[in-house]
Image 1 (cartoon, rainbow, N blue to C red):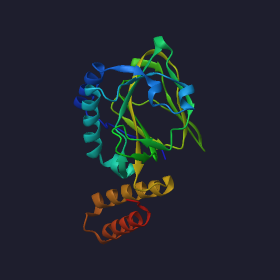
Image 2 (image 1 turned 45 degrees about the horizontal axis):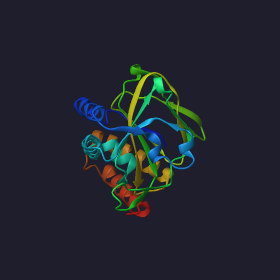
Image 3 (image 1 turned 90 degrees about the vertical axis):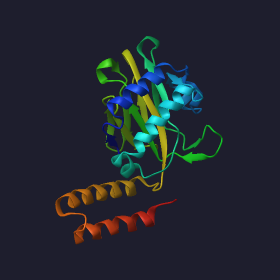
Length: 229
């Protein structure tokens, strides 16, 4: 399941995040790469201990908590603290084919998460750079993703994916992983579709309509069956 989340950041939040990371401490992006992905990762990354990164991270997490589509699609149990990367044409930055690590240890040393979903939050407008498409491969082929600044894409962390070389300008993004309460991608997709249908019916018939109440009950019974909390 690929889910685009438009306007995950408001214009004001986007401006502030861009300002913060622009003043941050950038380093070689290989510091968070696994053994295989480290062979194909060529970019820069904001130091996770940087105060500017921490402030930008808080803005993003607050925005996600208030975003209904994100919450419905991801059903998050844990979110890895958002990281930030930069791809520059002058440096020939790219990130070759790889699959994200199944387990990520939290940077504060307080545990680990299972990476069910990967996420890229675009912080640069598409017109600001050439190349840099996020390419996600699944059973239906390769999907090129290059969204507006402030938009986000969610996709299964099991997917083979890459970032194409940036040939002009600079590509900024935040990336992170989510452990979902529902680890199965197919089950999450069904729940997302059902939630969207319930919202549509509720808008037409009202929240207290018997069909809406019944379907809402079915949704929560399925969530109760499938969720791991």
